[in-house]
Image 1: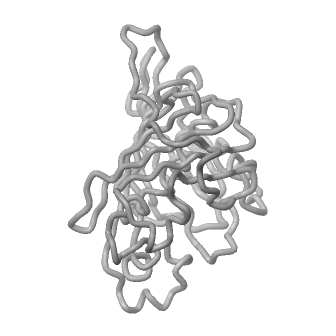
Image 2: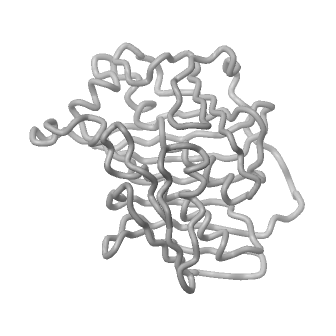
Image 3: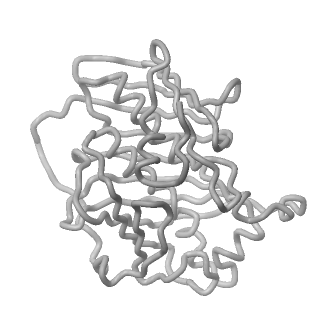
Length: 290
């Protein structure tokens, strides 16, 4: 199994598309080491891989939700193993607990719910927030080839001068958008873990995100995503983030993902760890320890 040579949406889809490796077992890669010195994979990558593994285990069903708890970092530029533990498999609903590991190290568990879609009994959804369009937003620079990110009313989330309410809105465009439902859901889920800590730190004047990252240790501890529609889209997606609580070393963020025309595709939550940085840790380059 080859590790993609550079960060791109195409390469990320290869990472998500884990391969069977025995009964209820799958194997995947973690992607290449980045140029910023980061040596661990993002937690949302394991979440996406677990979604794809469960979709392959239950091919007659669609993934409705996934809840991940991250206990150890996943080393970059290496192999990851996924074991799908079937809790229940019925005609309409199935549940599995996916363990994500490397060798003897358990790195994450992901509880996934799948079902067979049925006709509506009732229907409603939250409206898309009334924010500016992608054309009005601030380009944030490409995180990877095939991806474009624009921030609403924020120029740089890492600037200590970007002080405001604990909310962030981001427009995201990806190319390609996969036709397979499981890969599309994995791709949508991946970005839910990118701006949570930045959202939490935004209102703390004097401790802007860049300064905070120099003095505290942060990590994504859990992430959940619920899919409300078949995940297909054209153009831009709006990711809305709101940090409703922070304290006792933890933060909580909730959010939604809308299409440009207002369809609600998914809702998500995440818990992050925010702890004082030990003096010995500050010797590590900041990007490598995030």
